[in-house]
Image 1: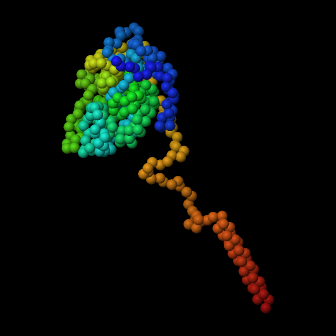
Image 2: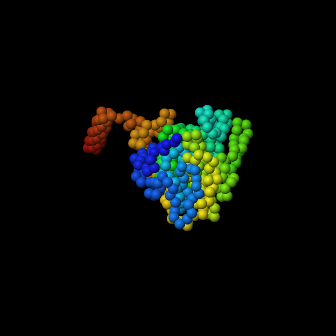
Length: 372
């Protein structure tokens, strides 16, 4: 027997992010009141969506952001590996994809699905993103987190990105989606994350790749995308699927037909979901533009200007450049004190007085000679 993680309606306090930006969470369901319903929400005047065993789902138009139908859209559940979409969306802009790294033993030994990282091999960040999104590698997720500055920093970055997207149902505790107490997402949030990811060319390239060569300590081997619909569904773009024994099956995907893209996200599915997702996508294409939406995928919030820390201490091992100082006239001037300045003034003043007396004496002697 499973239990829902939290109530549907988000009543979250303002979130203070590590970036210094605070985003105020709403007191009503993001995307519209109707999306707070636990049951099916569908438009009138068109056929209802196909039945699905998923506890929660969202069908949306990626271009307009219109939610075409939903079921328990804001229900918060364990996301499993669909959370890797947020990991990628967060880290792709932060990491140079040509950077080469050698993964730690900790990364290579992550439990669950893996792409097969080895401490004896060197990988580009680009390879790690392929391993993350194609093979659902938990080892690749940890290697990327470590490359980003560590697990704690990456979790802060991911949660900050979720808040910026207004994915307020999402709380990331792991970069891989492995179950951890307090971790959650929703079908609505997965659709938001997917829509934002589709706007990133690298993200879209990773999720759309069917097969590729992956580095090994000696040579390479071939990896395949876990998204079965890339081979089965006409126009499938990809995104991410996931499964754990506690989360059950989850999926978020997008397909494009006739220049239009539909996003479908499902959570807590008990069985084989690929055919159901295909039917939900078909329904989305058939009704888009013909029925009133039941909600809206909201746009990301603007990134506020970051304020520099007033007295931030440097990290250990970090070299610090002193603030620029006005140039000194000479080394002695830089060592002057009040007393030395006073003595110096007396010396200079006495010298001037002596000079005037000597000058006057010289003038007197010349005048005296002229009278002889």
